[in-house]
Length: 172
Image (cartoon, rainbow, N blue to C red; front, side, top):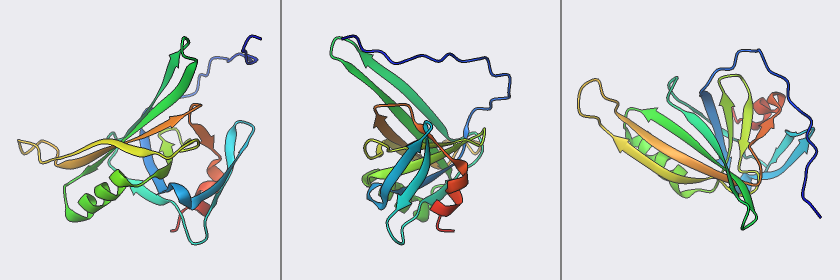
């Protein structure tokens, strides 16, 4: 029996589309107790009592999210890997401690892109750090910063999250 999924077509979108991400919200993976997908997007996210997502902000033009479809027909492999790169300026103790925590924890992440859309990473399995660095730079104009790459591997592209539920997920 052949494998197929119904196609529905796409029309050209003439709206402005900006690149980049604005901020990320990160929680421990086990703190997310359930997620509900309705009409192709996440409509609810439940958290364990007293738990919430934490806001991570960074300078404009320093964060990115890249999703890559990986296909191997011979082995029946089809998955999406998403790399979230976050850059935090100025090396200092508070940031060093946070980079170390991000590097070892299993995470759930929501990313807000420059178009005001929210994307969920960690739907199928935890998001984990895959790379990072800290550097002082050489010249005065070089960046002094920490950078961390968080990677998600999923059976699908990241799900969009209903923006109306974000405020309720933050402990602010």
